[in-house]
Length: 100
Image 1: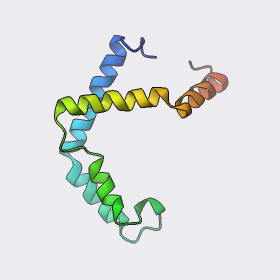
Image 2: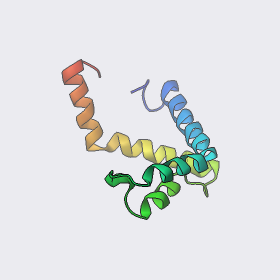
Image 3: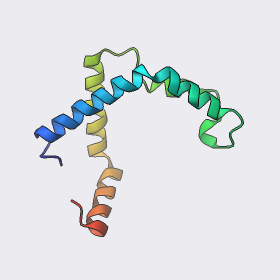
Image 4: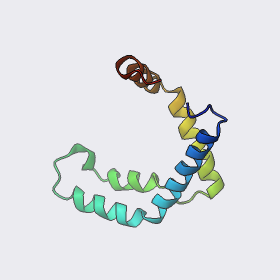
């Protein structure tokens, strides 16, 4: 995977993930506003309930330092690599498309 867990490309990917999370934090108010507008009158279940906006805001992790965010990215990637659904998807891609 991207040159291995210690490979340059994987480290670059982790850096991009961190930068993306930091960039998303900077624009969180606009994102939340768009979701609030979309939520009004929507029949989609994902927009129902009072917790929708609260949960969205929590996903920006605004109270974390950059070092904490870096650890969070590491944990998210580690969890994804250990996930059975990731393994199933990778097996599917290999079987159907020859992608390893």
